[in-house]
Image (cartoon, rainbow, N blue to C red; front, top):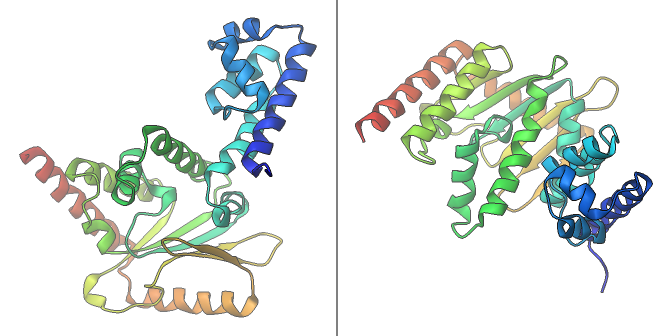
Length: 277
């Protein structure tokens, strides 16, 4: 039976780990003691039968003095396995983008979601999801958000339909925290948000999430996604159509100042509901 890409990545991580451990003249038990796991845990990593974990990879780097080797491998080879195939290259493109424009009709974009909101999103579509799966998604999604903290962060411009503010995911306290988080990002000048009000009626790009990324020395790329599928598109004609849709959205959306006021108001409503319950 053919091995999956995931298995190949795990095995590669394990092979490198074994070589570096042996070069350091450490047994599996000795390395395990240094990173606070059992020898059996190290053995499973080296055999490629256990998925490497980021915190342990970082501890291994410290123990073996390998700089960021295992952390880098974990992020690039292992954590990418947690993403759907069609989305796997998007985080790398986001990190290289100079400008990102996003439209989200029903959910807060992944780059802005707080952990409790992420958990609520997952459970709404998969109520039997395991804790491990949920926390994997939380970790992967919050890792992506580091691009907004970087000094070279892209100009991030988001269009949210008012529905995003009104769907009570995770309860009132979670929604209050989620909207407060977005408001703080806006006030910290990490992004621009414009709300498409309900009374605007039909609007461009209402059929699914779209993400338009611009780069310093490469053509722009469009990512579009529905519930079960997504695609990266760099066809110039399709990208041009996407730009036209963003122009139409600016015509019907609230101003950034009015949008922030609406977010603050919704957050306050959720806070009152949370305190009353």
